[in-house]
Length: 428
Image (cartoon, rainbow, N blue to C red):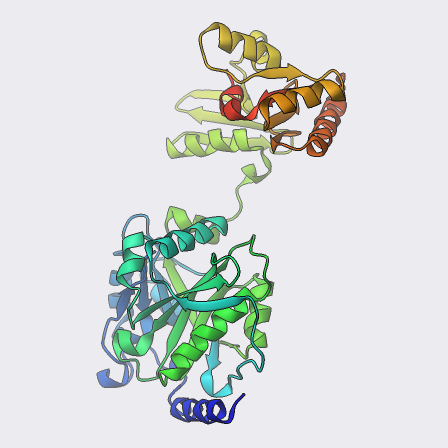
């Protein structure tokens, strides 16, 4: 670090020192209003609202705002130091998020002494950046943010959207969002918070998350803020390890959320159908959506029952007791399914049953990209898609034959032209 950089770093630490106090020692309404910043502070961050619990006079007032969550959004109430009091206002509507709150006091932060090669960080600035951010969100299972929202806040001082860019390819490979609490509600403690740290799982460069996190820390530290808070799931070991490495410490603050379909898995126990195959789960989810009762009899065996009114139908995976033996044979045998669909005028992919390796190679050369699957009902097992290499094809055939072995059937797998494979997988 140069002499000038050391001097600026010490100046930032001096500005931050003494500002951060222990907000968890105060309850809603305690202390004069000017000591809490602007009252009833809320900020929209694209996927929902951040609600700052420490700015509310009463738990009742906080609960009223929490109930105003918009459809298809996910609000988070942060800086809660007495969650039991707020939950008591509406236990049927709110839940305690199973996450830990960590805080970094900027006066304890130490920047890296070396530079990470191959990556640089900048503000989000274009539609292409917004699309790349949402693409990364989709890959890691996070809620997307409207493109217009991201573009409208690309120069914001309250909400900071940063992206990490691969120096070689120019591709966006990571993103992070920060909120400046001082600019949102005149936070007397000089706080800030981190949200939506996400890295492209296919990015070839290591350390992208740390680079993004350090850049956000130093951005807020330069502004003279005192600390950065973040919320992380209690079982996210790798993330917690990174935060602790940078000096974050766990603090006794909590987050509350409104119960909705987006976060249902956080407040409800795993359903018994978790072990069922995808076809059965699709049916069960749709049944519950329509108010049909579901009773999982044996998840490992794929057995469950649907009941509504006085009627009960037993099912096994995607089949029911109403499925005849003829219907079962029509959907179990791929060659028969193919002939029946084609006979009724439906567009179906080219198919070919494997006789030997040379025969299979000829089919691959003809179509370029193929799907390999067992010739008889596999319920999703033994299927390989987007095969374009002969070596991968041989491996795929072997995988399909293993499934046939388990069913006690002769080795038989079917090749299908990839361009229409979705039609070829339609079941009667």
